[in-house]
Image (tube, rainbow, N blue to C red; front, side, top):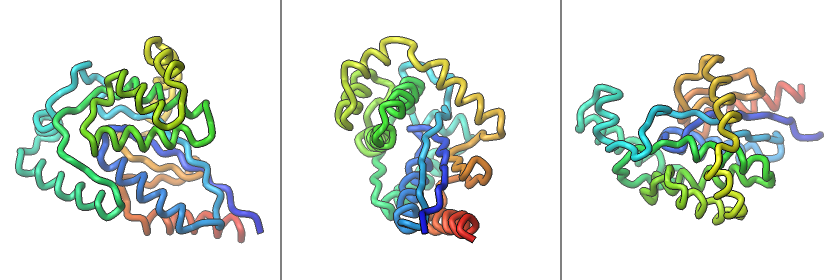
Length: 218
């Protein structure tokens, strides 16, 4: 019996901690399901802060203003995120600034066109760079280095970033999901019909994948 094909659209931002948690949990669920499903994973752009200034903002000040919470609540939230990440093998370290992510999404769009899992590798590299290493993922030199590290052509990456290439395509994808009611991330859409919101545990993703696989094979 052939594996059941399942399309997953993973709508997310690279400065969203719950997106890092959700992606790692989803991938572990996919591994658990194994040969029962043939998963096709697509990354879709979402900017948590589309109006973010080029120089970024202090992370604590930004979170306090945006969500109306104090420093103690922010610290508690970070502890929860750090523990969830550790359980999945992902390291969250203190990050000082929130950055603009539009160029990162343009680079991801290009990476997807390059095939062979390049987009997925770059997505992980961006998440690690920001959350683990505290790097500025709006800095074009950082982006070029990360692209090269996952096997993409550095010169071509620089050319994309130094132009407006893929800007319209990324904005169109962002509008597409916003117009369909996606206003928080991660949003994980299975077969373009079933929505799972947030950084859910591995078991939640696994159950959803198995239900779809069983329904298709029945």
